Image (tube, rainbow, N blue to C red; front, side, top):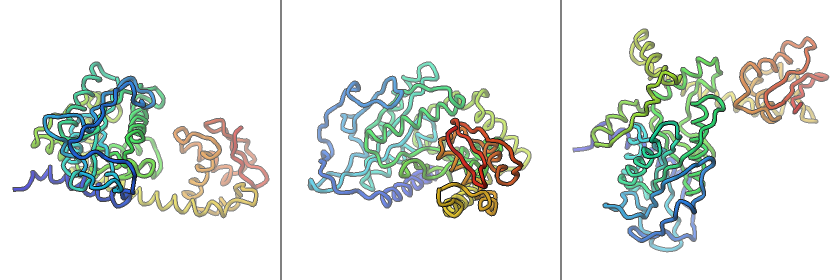
Length: 388
């Protein structure tokens, strides 16, 4: 008898991603020697580890630390010193149902493909006892056979609001961990429900098609971040944890109405389903994929068209920009503003619309001030975007 359908679904999703990772990042010969399974490894004290930016403390269980049972994901023994090391894939785990289901599937599938598997949990320090919960997650990851298993404590700033600041701190810590451990990829437990919420948040902000495309299945530097569960619903992940008797932690912030995403999850989406019927989440996730395909095509078009609208000195020619479709033109303008020093996260649609009016509604208006002390102005039929 095979595994429960929910367990089979999460394992299949992870198996596909691991196959993709091996195809895109095949192991390369390396002179480093990897100890065979069961060989002793030195335990590096926390004080000697290189901390992630903003870390306060960390707990690490090395891959070779003794356990009651040997790690299920220990790499296959090396037969010779000239064989490539097994690639390392990490899972970002909060201890919630989605990420615990992901961790369990990674621990089951990785050894079949000769992949080393570890786990990282980030302690945001936003709740009393968060450090103890992070340590508990590390122990759960270790019990699954994942190694290295590590908790990283970060200091959350205030830029962009609490949710955005926590996200920025979390990704900075994960990036640092990936560099420190030499990980090929980090798996994230975002589900189809998370994707639907992201699309609605983008729609509420009046953002463009790129925002409506939600989260990418592959993102980050060199495709570091992978989201295997974007086609699975949240209940599948929770069911997989239940049938495997995996303990999970429900973050109280996920039900706190002070947070926008929490209100959307518990009030907004249920109201939409009540008014429009079931299937809203699936439809929004499908919209995200269609929007992403369109956004990617428009980005490619803009990239190819940019050279044709610049003069010999590299300045943007307004007449040639005017001839382009608005969606392509605005992408070129946004890219030019960012290259001049405008922070991407502070450059909104209204800024691009103001620059666009220098081309489509020119009446002799003055320079436009953009974030990052960048100025855009029209001079002699050319659009000049530079530091003020």
